[in-house]
Length: 115
Length: 109
Image (cartoon, rainbow over all chains, first blue to last red; front, side, top):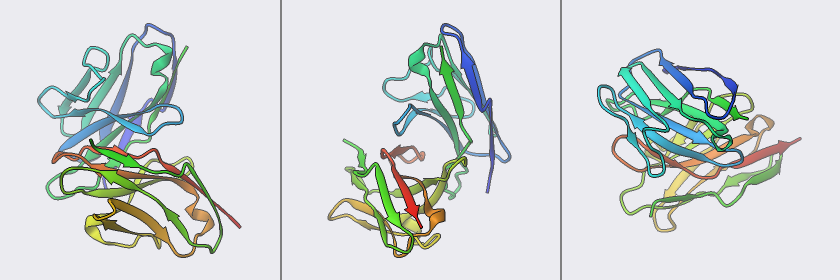
């Protein structure tokens, strides 16, 4: 099955700065999704990243705060902008191969701490 | 409203005992449900999905539309089953998933 390489695996950042998380898939995938997992909580979908178009954001998440790029079928980035301590979380990217393969697979996650 | 409920945060069982993780859902359409597992220091991975009607690592799950449930069961728990388990509901045709809160399973010898 496909593998996603996600980096960085962890980072400690100062408030007001931005961090870009990258996900590289070893094969083409139709859809990519970005999730957030706050401490002690479940996964919450941030947005769906479509190749060649703007990402589709879930309620409570906006493009200015979480800009996403999806330049091709194997790569996506999520930027956490103007960070505050409330953004401390694990961020996960995931991919769906499509074309009948409905098995969503995940990157290893980025543990973000904002001071 | 779409919702996935996993009522148990922690499930502690003895090796060899049966284990059942509860999952209830609320969804107006035809549900498609999954169980994901995260072992210690590993990434989240698909365990099984109701469409496949498969048994993976001895686990099974049956979709009960009448009770809106998708409970995960294994007749004899093993120590390697210790992990975090998430029930998930597919909420659109693109493949978006809504996850439950998760159940931490600890299997003691």
